[in-house]
Length: 447
Image (cartoon, rainbow, N blue to C red; front, side, top):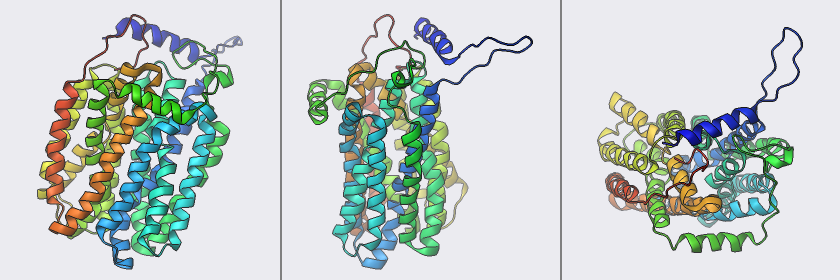
């Protein structure tokens, strides 16, 4: 589709990615890894640390209900605050990174989420849960949301943007894979408080790596972005909040923004709000042990990594709108079958669902980000932050309403069916997003 452009950028990537030094007789010149990949690795590890916090809320619903007598609706409301702030903070965090630098914002965010998790071990009322896990953790994780990945990708990469987006998006699933079984075992054997301390420590461990290795811009180390030409580091952008709101106002005047925001809201509703928050308690309702249900959720993370990286590869080569339509349609079908698969034990059809759903979990991110980049150019990271906000608002609504539905109906079945129908709507919305024709010489990796 963009063969000439791709060949040009890949050639530039190879030139930038290697440093040739005079070779001694009989020795080959050495190839050096471009610094952009080191930054990508640090970003990946940072997102894994942040994923520890996103792994815990679904495991806390039953223990908090048992210990304090709080309704699932109350607990779900605290989780919904966390998810909503996770999204609403993202565009402002992207603007703050332009003003103060990626490193400072991420270190501050990790410190805030660690504080929220640690202080939660002393809570005695549901409003304190809303303050610690809702407000503090929501603000902190929102500053390390996907807009963080978008900022790193936009600054450090010209070639391979779709692939890098897929890899960094998969970091959240990798964190889920690491922390879900661990936290489930800790909750089952030692209670929820040691689990909260564990995820707080995970965030603090990441801080030194961020401070020492996460450079803000390629120009800081005298390099060009991977696959691009050298550019001077732009001056800090003042008025971060004003800029974030201005970008929202401009984007809101365009139809693609609302279609992207609507589809991503459904994405959040059917993943973070539904599966991540309510799968474990729903499986437990059917007699499955919490540790087994959490392990299944972690396995989703394994296939999420594969699906998201592959989606990034596909996004570099195919129409992002059609990819989104396929992803949402397949997700909706899988959710319609889930109520029939829940049982006290793990059986082959449930394993098939886990694999199938895992491949689709956040495969939507690379094509969504590619469409934001295609439509909104230099403001795409902030626009994607607002689109992510809609993702988390959708997640927050279902996290809350799912708990209410369980209190009212005694099961989650109605929530699964409604989410399946919403995914079908998202597939149709994705197909009507208009394309922007790229001028000659546009960067590769836009999908």
